[in-house]
Amino acid sequence: MARRHVSRVAASVAAGLMMSFAATVPSLSAASASTAPAVVHVKIANFMFMPMVVKAHPGELIEVTNKDAVAHTLTSSKPKLFTTGNIGHNQTKGFHAPKKPGTYHFICFIHQFMTGTLVVK
Ligand SMILES: [Cu+2]
Image (cartoon, rainbow, N blue to C red; front, side, top):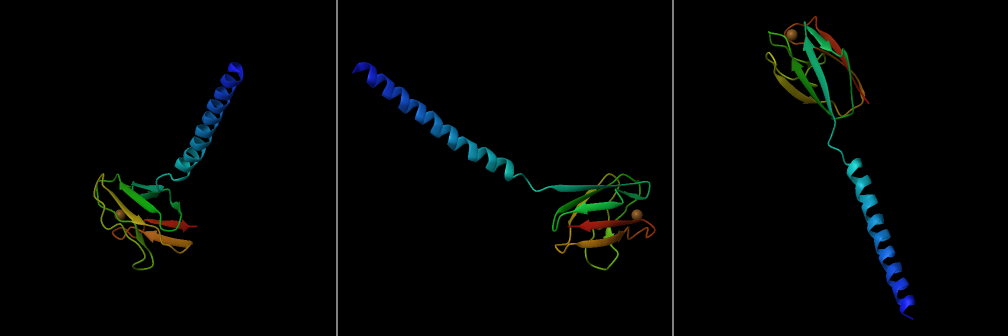
């Protein structure tokens, strides 16, 4: 009788452990799924965009850092799609990729021989 009681307690403890384990697993996978939104980094150095082909998801934040002593921009070749505005030496400015998937060419508005491509998909 006493022995049966003990094993029943052990069984309920084991069930409790299993339940708390089961409750832990979904919260772990939820945490890994809800990661912070990605940021795409672009660098400007020696009057070049790096990388020259930038890949981003629709609406994603793109941060552009200018390592040159002079100001640059990252500006869509087609007017008014996106621009960082002037980025000074060692400054970083961000803009959001277009929501519409596609291939977008960009330039530095100040030095229009500086070119690159943004692929949104
Ligand atoms: Cu420039």
